Length: 463
Ligand code: DOR
Image (spheres, rainbow, N blue to C red):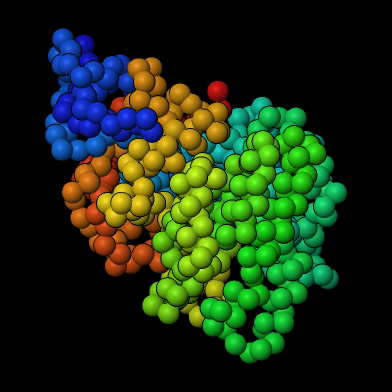
């Protein structure tokens, strides 16, 4: 047998072009992509007539909570959800317990995740200020995809858990780094050449405004949003940009939610600084007005903002301000997500609905399928140094594919999600354009919504 798998008659989609071709897989790699049928038998043949074949989609922002809060989610479930949703690689966030804060914990976490991975994965490392600034070089050598910094968040001394609503005087808590500490961390990350990715919300501003808003006794969405406004995002983005200009750090702004944030990033990019940014489906498909029907399950940090913000984010997709779109998959249990809006935790499932929502945007004419190939595959692969192993439809690249049926329709249903905690803002959303197969290094892990394999995923490191 010359080929392991022939996928014939599909339409290949890359950021540059869409064309009919046959895909030949051998030894987990792309052996050939040809408009003519090639000689030689294949062990397995799949007819992809009427389907589009994209380079395997990557979700760069996933919190699987493994270890630490595995009652909410774990890597077995999150990667199953990824496979079900057409994602072939995820980048796992490092704020676990223990966190991915040094080379030793990187190795321990790698072993933990490897046993459960249904798709391939990269691993973020965490920056904890003075606590691990001396470990960043080793963490880089271990193979992290980049470094994440939760700007303004405190850290629990006992278990390194992040504390979102830090107040002065809290016991056993390491307060957030001051600006000098952040500056030194950025210098240290600049030396590695990797990305310094920030959660950008100014906690001083948020604490002050939130206290004021809480005193009103109201807990409607507008009041909570007034305590956590776009200004908080803009201020931290501006500070990050100023420090990146000084240090030469490759700054990446995570989950951008606001018009002001987008404009600050765009300006810095136009000035030639290596600043990248992402946004997420919740900011592209929801606004404050959806809170009335969806309720607290749509609470995420940064909060979903107004229609004018959503419009500016779409413009940012169009003009290239955003190099990628990712889920910020961050499940909490259904019980935790019920109650007073001030106190419910922020975050929801996202990895399984990311591709369907973006494909639906294609069906609605908002973006092209080629843009999806760029935003969810080629761009993240290039940005995080795993291209052309990932994100590419060239011979020699990993045989990762997301096959989609743009005529197929589905309804996102909470109970059908593969995550442990099934909390989504998109319950009942009608989708046109559905991933029908997920292929990871030649292995079909999902076909027609069914998960076909156990954990086959392995670590991907920057090349
Ligand atoms: O909504 C959010 N939830 N935003 C974050 O940045 C963190 C996440 C979480 O881990 O729950």
